[in-house]
Every structure is written in structure tokens, then in C-alpha cells.
Length: 207
Image (cartoon, rainbow, N blue to C red; front, top):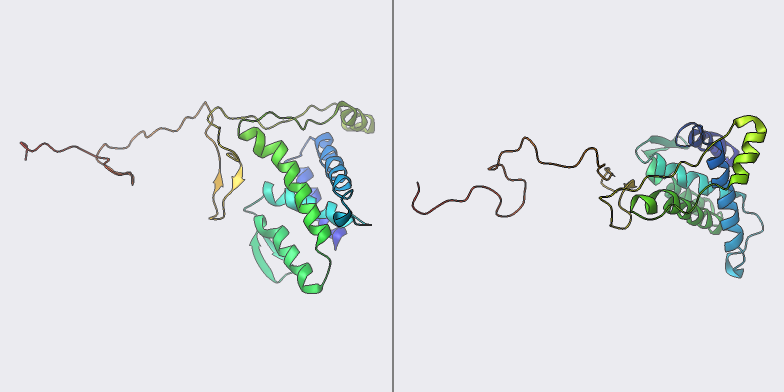
């Protein structure tokens, strides 16, 4: 089942957000593996096998990149991609599998997504760049020269987690770009938008 998950969601990431960014994809896996190894130093988090954790990290990143994708879990439940890691976590609870590897994978996946997407969109500095040696290794294997593709920060940002985050009501929250600022064009002054005291003022000596 884990091999099937890698083939389905890992390939979907390669062909989607990481298209023509093979080095960045490889760096995501390396960063996830290193994060899991660091967490395993803590005795209570130690696990002899962390393959399941890497799989959960891939699933978590996929769920953030495709939050509105419709998926079917084992042919029993149809839901949005945003909930996939938690449904798989609940399934492991039902069958009695240990939850620690799953939780570690979710933590590693969220750490990567926060540093590469959420933090830069909130106006922070893009620090998790793919090292040059990863690009060289990928280029050596015939993928060509690649460059980092960080998420561009928005000048309108300034609130933590503002940007490509997913809200539970089904909407994807995006920040406006400088080329397309948010304006209220085409709206009449007397058409209220739910804000108190918005509209025309009325003088007492006029009908």
C-alpha cells in the first residue's frame, strides 16, 4: 500500500508543483529524511523504521498542494485532498498500526511546507533553498541545469500564514499581487457590503 501511495501521490507532485524542478523534489525528500533523523534523536520519538514517515510526509505535502482534489480512500470514502493525511491516520487507528511514524511524517511535511511556501508568502525570507550540489547531481543524471523556484513574497503580506493556506470552509486563501490590487470598482456608494454605517448620509432638512 505504501508503494502504491508513493506511485500515486509522489508522481502527482513530480508532474504538478515540481514539474521541471527535479532538484527541488529531491531536496524535499532529503530534507524530510534529515528532519526525521533529527527527531529520532529524542528517545521517545525514536523508531527503527521511518519509511512510513517519509510516505506520510509526501502525502501531507500533496494534500497542501492539491487541497480541493477529490479522492477516494480505499473505495469507501470520497473527500477533498486536504483531509487525506488525517483520514489515513484514522485508518491506522482502526487497524491498530502505530501512530508515531505517521505523526512524525506529518510534522516533517508541515515543516517543509511552512519554510518553502507559507513563510515566504507571509513576507519572510526564503531560506530553505535547494543546495547547489543537489542541482549538480540531478544535472549529472541528465535532468539539465535547474534553479531554485522559491515562492515570491507579497508586499501585501505581513500576517503569519497569509497566502496559499487552505481554509476549512473550502476556500483557498490567496494574497493579491501588485499587478492586480483589490479595489471596489463598479460598486455603487449606496450598495452596502456588510460594513456598518456604509452608504449615503441623510440630512435632516432634505426629504
